[in-house]
Length: 357
Image (cartoon, rainbow, N blue to C red; front, side, top):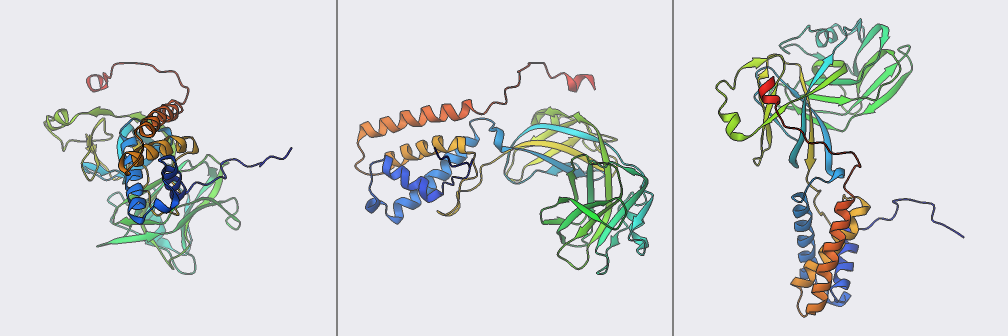
């Protein structure tokens, strides 16, 4: 007996979802006018947005690392954030580097070992050696790297790879970063799977002829310390919102059009990192040739909901069919929601952190 031998290789496009929904609503291909197809795409968009409000979907959870500067009150959250599930101040150990790379570029020393606490200095790579790097005499494990952008008066675009080497000659790519457009003084942090100790480390630009940074912070993550969540009234009742401290203890999540997390106390230095776990919106429907960015286990529920919604909108659809599709949509949605569990035990405990810190 022959089997496909593949998993998750079947791709369902928006056009296929719409066509199947029309068939379930009892409409033929000839009845699928451009007007109705656009209405189906709009209905699909509304369905995806409504699902965002029904609870946390495990596949929409994202772990973000955000950097903060001295006296920074609020951090902008990634586009599409709908809820903060956890917020932690990250305690980092930053080992002192032994030397910087390339040796011929003396400005690279500005980026390390606290030599540039106010971030006023910077270093720029050269076309010949388009990287900025560092070394440790005895080797070191690095689990997180952050860098601060240099783009006076505007923004800079980076296409960087993070590489390590045992001898400074043969380099191994450990992380390929997405294309980044950062404003001046913006931090970008990324976490790395623990690797064996290495002596040589570098960030290398792959597109532009040179790039500039204000700081590089290679670190070992020591601990993530939870922040207590405040509501709006409690945050605005704080008597001194500009109070600075070595680490923040609490936050308020401002769910405005531009979503932000407000910190208290605010950072007293330029080298603060926060781990923010968020629930994100579903991606847009896009064109008919696109696929939905959802797990396959959710496709049946979304398909049923679209069929029911179209059946209610299209003319001359039998009432019994509409009621049947409504029942199928509810049943398949329940099945999909039941699959959004990680199997971990649930514990309840009072949040007394604001009163004990």
